[in-house]
Length: 218
Image 1: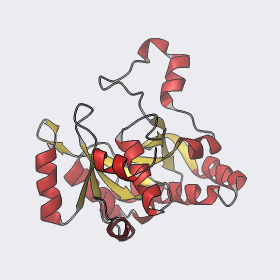
Image 2: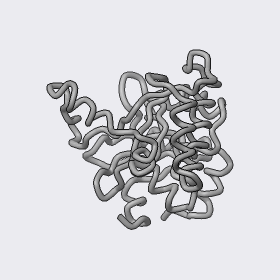
Image 3: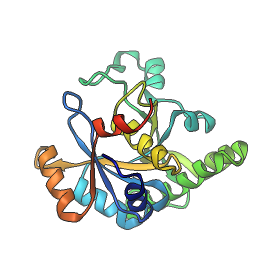
Image 4: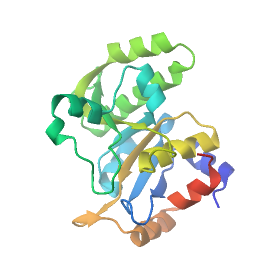
């Protein structure tokens, strides 16, 4: 059972939550932070202890308001022979990769934290002034960059870490803005059992996809 108050408290304190998707799907664990609490130390932890691709996550709806599309749609139009689905069956959630204009190369911990902080600011602005948010996004970011943006289609359409992360944030009433990276091990993805031991040792919450499905409405 997911304790809403505990989950929100952890996310607002800048602590990560570990999310396992589902048996028979990717069978991977992602480390997830709330986008509004990212620091360079968060990126450092994602890079060193998770090890997978560090991605920024928001919703498909917010992406559309910023003029973003799924990369798979761009690939289908430009390179149709490359538009294949992964073995687990879902189309990828990737959109553009961006850097903030104030970064230098975009890749170090400080730079990626800066890009993510400013992406969060754009997302937070959408409900106040959609036009201003899009203008800010187009003025302050460039692509390609070092932070991939993932867009959640919603758990009723796709049940990946992108959608699970956004659903957790909606569940606790936080802005739909997350940062995720896969937990890796030597040569392969980290097992659920090892990730669970890591979570217990560090005092981080560990949540399975099936738990999320029980708590949220699709």
